[in-house]
Length: 119
Ligand SMILES: [Zn+2]
Image 1 (cartoon, helix red, strand yellow):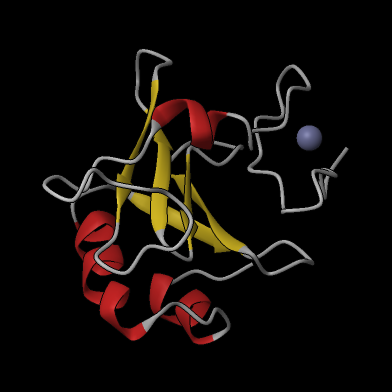
Image 2: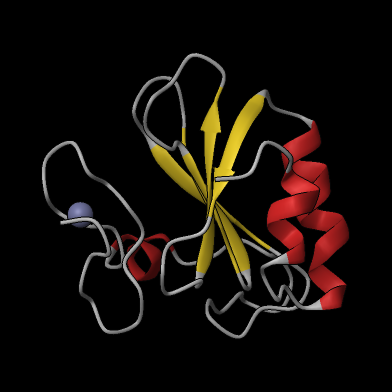
């Protein structure tokens, strides 16, 4: 568990091209805790007052939950995981959604092997 995004970033090999975009996302929100799962495939971000993460910084995109429960992703400039259409950087929602743990109340992003690190 880290109390700064920079500390978490130091343990997470985000492509250099994406670090500025990841910082910009975090800077616009009020996250207070950050941690990496054992697989180190993403950084979980916990907002102030929350006990569960509501955003996950992956290698090529950030996935996050809005206050109304909807989820969306923002692709970073260097993105091998999600395909944009070449003009926009919107990730394909159904592609990313497949990687969210289906266990009620969990909602963690699953690593590529599909096995939740927490369930
Ligand atoms: Zn889970």
